[in-house]
Length: 137
Image (cartoon, rainbow, N blue to C red; front, top):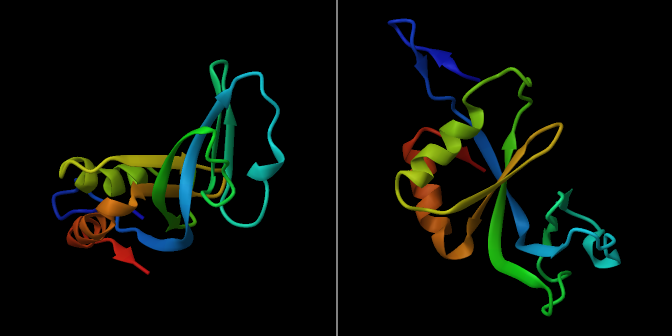
């Protein structure tokens, strides 16, 4: 997806992004806790276990309010395919957001990447991504 400029230097990748329908929560459980039943279900879900935590991203209507979480994220899927050795894809998407003070949350999977931004920042994120040459579907 990256392009080579006239002088042979790399230009930022142009990425197509598709918005997912739900609002998402990023939830933190203890490292030793079992994966809860509420985490599973249709749609985009990411479950990551580290030595320090069990982190779950899922539609927020499934996350119990009593759990430690950050809510009201919207998600975009970066539409590939992208090769594992292809560089600059995620950077080309997060750079215009970071440079304009917008917080992001990235989830990478075997087949792709997902960008999450706070719902309150969505209009600005769409504008900055479009200005950077990305296509939002």
